[in-house]
Length: 273
Image (cartoon, rainbow, N blue to C red):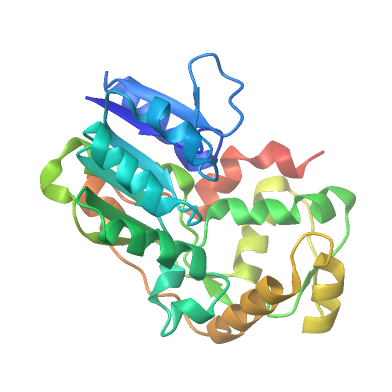
């Protein structure tokens, strides 16, 4: 009953691997470039790596890489895999996910699994708490954080909660074969999140209201144009509008979802360089 966990170096996968091992469940970490001796190579952009990685596997935690998702599903079916849990995104819930750079890769991966005979479960988390790591450099440098929509709301879901939901679904077949929208317990604006980080670090953190164009110029090295525009449009749609929350974490794990403040406490050192 081995579970293959792809993207093993990611925050969600790392937490899931730890949970499965704590439960005494056989787990096979997988990465496109594994560094851990216990991990196998499974590059979701290279179908030649699929067969060996899936040998003897009964379930999979899969990152949403769409380029060869159909081939992965076919290989998994041939290997006898019974259940795939896909880490998708709540972005697919937009009216036209095919037109959104934020949603396109995830909806394509979802469709590939829907066409497969392997039972699949779709996890659709909202905004990761870890996205706040993007503010660590200016906070450490004592600089203001430039935001075009400081009052945009997010649901701030802790990566460990996504992992806990995945572990619950993998452990209980009755919970599978359906989509789950996974959120944090609070709707917070970016300004709220920065206030939390200020309290946790003991530092005054200024927020600078900038234009969309200024933000794109600052982020041009890291985010391409269409993706940046899609992010900006999404934040604009959330400006002053509380995020919709779901009880999925508590319903599937039996405990309340972790707060952004708890994440900030856990990662305090990253903001105090």
